[in-house]
Image (cartoon, rainbow over all chains, first blue to last red; front, side, top):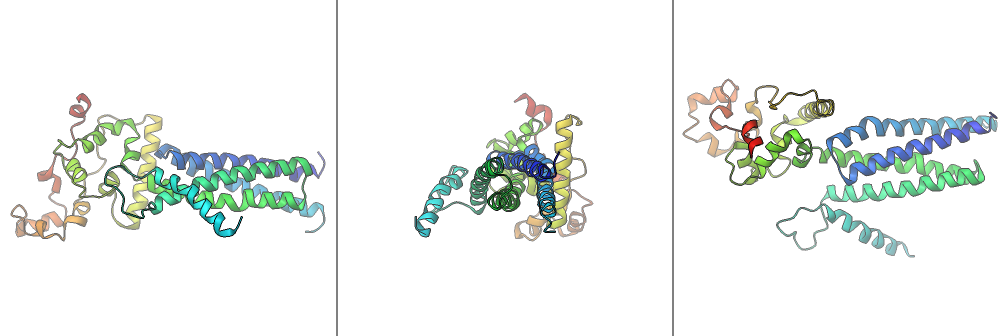
Length: 69
Length: 234
C-alpha cells in the first residue's frame, strides 16, 4: 500500500463512521425510545469521536507526506 | 436568492417539522410557533439531513479528485463541523424525550402503569396526579427522580440500568420499586402548600415523622399504582 492511499482510506472510514452516527442521531430525533437513545449515546457518539480522530490522523498523515508538518 | 428569502424558506420548511410533534387538545395561542424542544428536534433533523448530503459530497469529491483543497473542505464540514451540531441537538432532544411518559411506556412491562395513568376512572395516586395535571409533564420521571442535578444524574444512571435489564431480560415480574419511596419527592411540591400544612390529616405532632420520612406518605395516600395482576387482567 502506498503512502498516498493511507490518508485516503482513513478519510473513507471516517465518512462511513460519521454516516452511521448520523443515521443513529436521525433515528433518535424521529422516534425516540430509551433503547435508541442509549444506543446513540454509547455506540453513535463513540463512532463520531473515532471518525474525528481518524480525520485528524488522516490530515496529519497527509501533511507529513507533503512535508508540511 | 437574497439572504432574508433564504432564512424565510428555511423557517417555512422547519415550522411543520416543529409543529409535527405538537400535542393534541387545547388549541395553541395565536402566533404559536412551537416549543423550544420542537424546534431543537426540527433543527436536529434538518442538520442530520444536511450532514448526509455533505457526507455524500465529501465521498464523491474524494473518489473523483482525491485529496484536494476542495475535498478537505467538504471533509472538514461533513465530519468536523456539522456532526457536532447533530450530536448536540440529538443529545438535547434524546435527553428530554427520555423523560416523557411515552418513553417510560415504550417498555411493555410498564404498559399497565401507563394505561392506569390514562384511565380517567382510576383513583390511584399516580392517575390522580396525571389526569388533573398536578404535574404538568414527564409525570413518571418527576415522581421517580430526586430533585436537583444529583437527582437527574442518579435517575439517568438508573434508567440506563432499566434499559440494560429490559433488553437482557434480567428483571422479575411484578415490577416493584427498588427502594422505599422517599417522602422528600412528595414534599418538594406539597411541603410548602397550605392545604398540606393545614390539613387535619397532618396534625402538627405527626409533621416531624413525615418530614424525616419515618412515616411514608403513601401509607395513607396509596395505592400509587394498580396492582400488577389487576392491571394485567384489564
